[in-house]
Amino acid sequence: MLLDNTITELGTLLRSKKISSRELVEEAYDSIEKHNGALSAFITVREKKDALCDADASDASSSRGPLAGIPFCLKDAYVTKDLKTTAGSKVLDTFVPPYSATVVQKLLASGAILIGKNNMDAWGHGATNENSDYGPVKNLWDTTRVAGGSSGGSAAAVSARMAAFSIGEDTGGSIRNPASMCNIAGLKVTYGRVSRYGAIAYASSLDTVGPMAKSVSDIAEILEVIAGVDPKDATSSRREVPHYSTLLEKPLSGMRVGIPKEFFAEGLTPEVRDIFVKATRMLESLGAQTLEVSLPSLPFGVSIYYLIAMSETSSNLNRYDGVRFGNNPSFFGEEGMRRIIIGTYALKAGYHDDLYGRALKGRTMLIREFDALWETCDVLLGPTIPTLPNKLGDLSENTMSAYLADAFTAPVSLVGSPSLAIPAGFSKSGLPVGMQIIGRKFDEATILAVGHAYQKATDWHKKKPALLS
Ligand code: GLN
Image 1 (cartoon, rainbow, N blue to C red):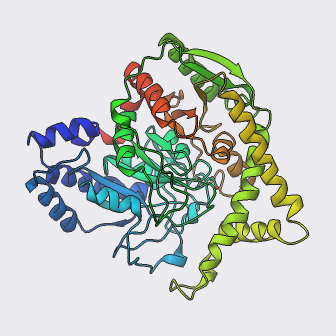
Image 2 (cartoon, rainbow, N blue to C red; image 1 turned 90 degrees about the vertical axis):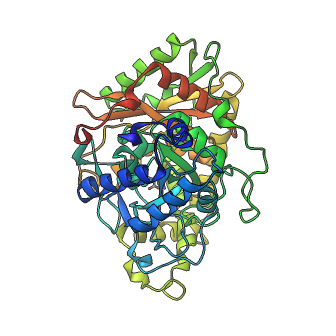
Image 3 (spheres, protein in one colour; image 1 turned 90 degrees about the horizontal axis):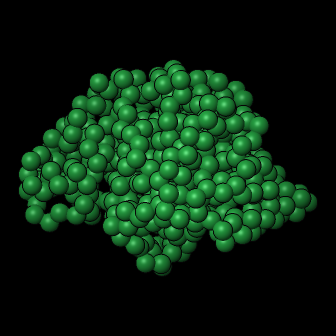
């Protein structure tokens, strides 16, 4: 398939007119027709004729950025002008936004072709994508299993070649978790690296906008387009945006890779641990120097994260009062209600200091522990999620186990660091396993370089689900 190629390769083929954007878009829609019924990767698919019309315009145009003519999709957490946007919740089932998010505007301006809006856990609440009001997303590697969450539709769509890439959203793991479960790459950017304007807010001090694609080089190409300051988002950073795609070829020799020993916690599935250990050996063979380090507060990360995330979401969701956005607030599902109630409780006078206030102190402790490690490490390495992709239904009745899926990702979100999830191997049963490379704030370039070096030496990311062949 053409969509097996990297974005750089597709760009070269497009510029030399060996292929057309129309062909790429046709291929994406063919795959949607074949697989979306089984996977539920989309909530809204754009009219094919509109996407083809954009593709023809791109084929006719001579100005070509790296994403021109490339089909992409978006987690349904980003508002799109004149195209329904639900955040995975029936509360917004009839919401057609009057404007587009900054990330959408940037991608459209770069000439990328929008295919549709991906399924997601309602409001970003979830780790398995079973908490969507539009049905669970299934994993193409085994359709009896979940695709991960909350950006599960994005990961499923990319792994099924329904687009070349998707934009996900990561608050506590929602890009990294489904990327790992579906054998693709996903980047949680530094908080503030990409504008959140037009992103439907989950937890405002944690939400990040990031790319999901088949390879690290694709991620670099996309990040270059979407990163940067935005006057409409006061938390977006003014730091210059490096040319990530030209900084990928960094030798690993001498690179100091810290491995926090707390990642080897009780809940870590032995098969996931073994695959992770093998991946660290591979990085060593490429010249990296690994060292055991410690983040003593890491085991408290999930509790700290959920107190803060629920407090913030209870505040963010109170705008959906049925007055401004059409539908009835009683359409909130069980998980949404749970989080609103717990968050409101944690912020209540009398409980605030004990719950929310203590969580904030815990967050500061974690930030200090991570900061101290940057004296001796260039990057940190860990498994992305402690388990293999779960069977559908396994976690939907077990809220605590579902929250523990974020044990390794949520602490990184609390400190604001960037983290890149990439494929690291397969279980005996053929299920994908990922790992995450964590960097200093705003040092996406280094984690991308490490991920790229690993992908040049391995071919896990090139493996395709049997259903695609
Ligand atoms: N699973 C986590 C949660 O439910 C993370 C979600 C996210 O990153 N959007 O909060």
